[in-house]
Image 1 (cartoon, helix red, strand yellow):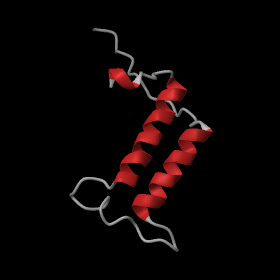
Image 2 (cartoon, one colour):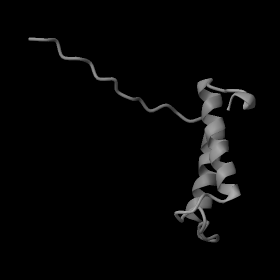
Image 3 (tube, helix red, strand yellow):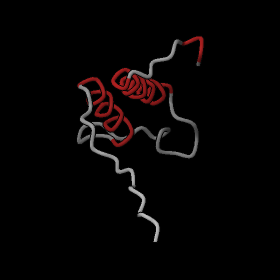
Length: 76
């Protein structure tokens, strides 16, 4: 009988302060808060609004900075 293979299990990696901040801003923008409604454009089948795109890029860049996977703009 063959040996069972070990499954790769993801572990929870703590987010950096930059990632946490970018994520909270994105959630507040797309989901709204008690005082501000959610962005209607980001919550529709249309493309994200410019602010939503910027917030998503900020989160992506913060994650890349933490993991060391930063690429120059020219390579994107």
